[in-house]
Length: 276
Image (cartoon, rainbow, N blue to C red):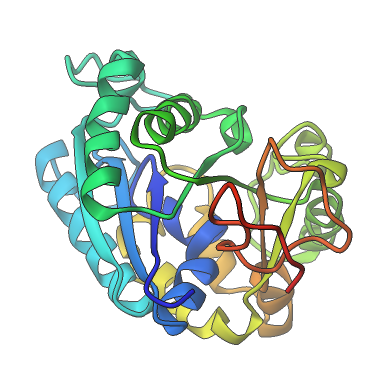
């Protein structure tokens, strides 16, 4: 299957690393082409640097390019929308959450056709933890794949069961936000019985960690420790355990046993799925 194209669609720079960074690195290492598409440049994100939104947007897009290089040479495309914000929503006229999903889907579909994409990754319907831009990525990505005829759409997610176990373990790590509560994750991401793909990316955690470190602007800012900063100071065995596997849901596919370890499995509608 060498020579296929994976398009990994995300809301903001740095989103590409945690859920799909290892999968991107693995695909590139196998000779596939990868295009990382971000809906926004992340200009509404927190940072410890004194930057206006336009300068922060430029910085975060530059960090994304460094992250893509660390993963093995993925290409980067900005879809042209503004970061909608979370705690401080923006009133920007091009905010991604307020855009017509059909119009955004046509824009993404044009890119999928141009790249002759075999696989598109998006997010699960809840956007993982509920960020409105992430939910919009799910809506727009699913529709764009239909318009473009992209054969495989995978929803990047996390297996909730080991996530909860690791969240409980993380309570011993110094510097976590005081409001950190593992039980808050009980309804985030995906039930393990819905997950179709479990990708072993342990051979690529060094690339994944380097890509994470490339997003330096997102390791500071705010009144509590940032997630990236916490992840990067984890003991190595904990980091490897936390980020050595990535999960996806292909909704129309009966859940196989064991789960598939290849995002390109069943890339054509007439091709039987095979375990890897």
